[in-house]
Length: 138
Length: 427
Image (cartoon, rainbow over all chains, first blue to last red; front, side, top):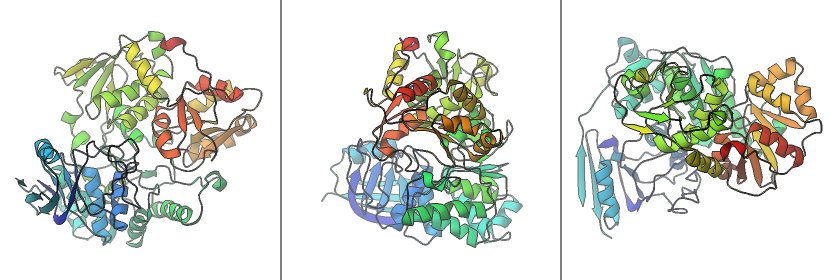
């Protein structure tokens, strides 16, 4: 279901483990900065970020805002469960006139299907009531 | 592969007053704040908003220029908080500006962010323990608090009602005077669903401060967002012990509320805490398991030590008294930091006790702390602490390795410059 409306396209980045944006993503480069995370060093910028759930500090909304401000944010975020922290950073970014991105919740099963798929490029379109995720093999 | 998901649109029902704020009748700042509160309420599926009696703001800590821009936007729009609001730590020690080694753009922006939140009418308390600086909501009162340890304390120890409001949401609730009525604001979500029975733990250990951060760390990692009721703790468990436990639990997991049978306000007995229902799980952490959690709070086994830091959450009056009684005659051989709020700092100053701590080599950090600002010696590599929260965050935020020990262990180790720990109660 849509968490936040918008449209985004990019290569999929499926996180093998949940991630805290605060302490886990560099707000200036947009790369995963937690050395214990399996996707350490991966850039989020321009990707369709697929993650089971966001975890950790509620300051992650501040990091989300910085990613949008610094133009290194994902093109869209696809979650396995609705998260109130990351979307807050997106709402504040809109108030400040920065770029915005869609967030959608595909549920735990939806997450597993995407995780077990073969990757490629994704296209997210979210409206007020409906969300669409299309994945094309690259 | 295509996936289409749909949901019925849910819009919270607003009172006339709330609608007026949303339509801008009270000015542009409350309008912006209410717009965000209502959009979040919709995302969270809340059917209505709840008036909040107070707020505690975590968003005043600098993470980047966007956060400063947002705070200054609210100031420019004439924003003033609508309810009594305290401030969590900033990235600078305003009482002792040389304490934090930051310079240039970062320092200037951190300062601007702190000043902007003051300009919004928040009280410059600069502490992560506002509940020990005069901000104590009543049982059953709905509030909007940020900072994970303050949230878990407000819910668990005071019986007030708040969700984990982080950066931006905290100040929006304070300006709008409302929060989405969901989560821990609702009675049914405050009921414990998990019982944690500490009956297998050595009773002598449960009397000691050093036990509580370990139990909290275990709790957070084990129950996460679920609400637990802990049984078998002594009725003498102190506020500072519960504060340390809560802070640790909210570091290792997403704990927002726990109950302690016979101690915390919503758990006079087990049945009440469980809301008269059967628990989904009964967990019994054993001595071996807790010992392992305690060991995992340290990231090194080295005896060499570069600094000690206490005070996460910020040191209380009672904790200063405990430390004072342990101060050695000779000054500490390594830097010894105690982080506290400015209210406590000023109390030490006026009561003439500050000198005793300074003579022993204690460096008191106010307004901020060692894991959110560059304070620890640049060349050191091992920090010892009695705080589960410091133990959790120190490696990632400072690059230091960490050793967890009791207050007594920390004092003894700082006196010699080498790690000494009392292992007796843990065996």
